[in-house]
Image (cartoon, rainbow, N blue to C red; front, side, top):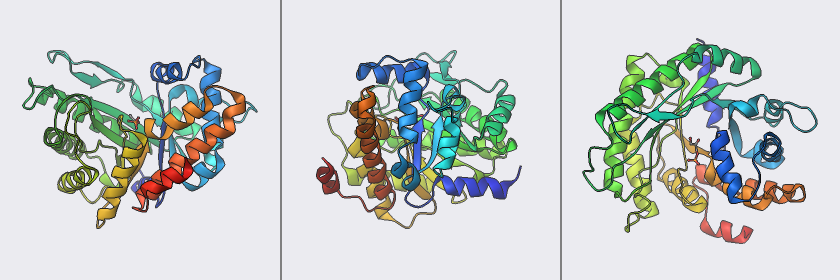
Amino acid sequence: MNLAELNKIALAMVAPGKGILAADESSGTIKKRFDAIKVESTEQSRRDYREMLFRSDEAMRQYISGVILYDETIWQDAADGTPLVRLIEQSGAIPGIKVDEGTQALPGCPGELVTAGLDRLAERLKKYYERGARFAKWRAVIDIGEGNGGPGVPSMTAIHVNAHALARYAALCQAAQIVPIVEPEVLMDGGHDIERCHDVTQRVLNKTFQELRVQRVALEGMILKPNMVISGKKNAKQASVEEVAEKTIRLLKACVPAAVPGIAFLSGGQSDEDATAHLNAMNRIGGLPWRLTFSYGRALQAAPQKAWSGKAENVAAGQRAFTHRAQMNSLASKGEWKADLEKKAA
Ligand code: 13P
């Protein structure tokens, strides 16, 4: 492992004013997104859609540091035969790859999940590196049981096995000279309040960093991709932007060592504008030991998907919508976003 090189890539992934495009939806997930815009999900429509994003020159050059790809996409070529990975590299962004293989039921823990994909991971990483991937992603999913106190969900078991798998994955990535994005996602589904999200996220982050240490993962060569500390979607009392920012920063400062180069949040089902406003408010607090940016899927892609709607004549509109969201989040990563910039664009 060349740690100086891993650190250089990790820093480039969170370069000032830039963030990560999570375009790594599995075939099942992208089908759901396409269903919503009435587009048939085929190998070609998925390619055309992603090619549209990667050819958004302004967005890719100025606001996007890296792109997380799904296995199908990393092997695909653009319509003119150029590998999609090359398009990303030509724009100056870094190609990355989702390497987890989704979730499975966790035995003994009804309703809870563990992420699969460690078998043969070392061999797969080698092939992805040869294709150009310089970072990877693995997502663990932690659910919060209904009600405060909850019916025992998440269990200690679910937190432990998922943290263990994240650390196994991260160590294998670094051995393959690939920067791991460590993503322990506490879901925002449910009626819990922000305090409960805070407490569960704290347990999850502490366990994750404990496992990373035990398994000798070099913190300088990884990126953390956490959820924000936020009210459950179904809770009637939604915490303010300031409260989300203040609670998230306080928790991250307590749990995430300064050796970690950067934190890139997931959007997790927040509205586009909430995801931007929260990131902005956190960066306005300032004085942080790590760079704080976005690694959004839905909050970067919902608008371009709608504008595109599967029609070749809408490609320019789709690219404009993507560029706008990427620019808004770029500003938020510097604490320079303002709500009226959204209205001006609309
Ligand atoms: P969302 O921003 O849509 O949560 O997706 C980010 C991601 O990569 C989830 O694994």
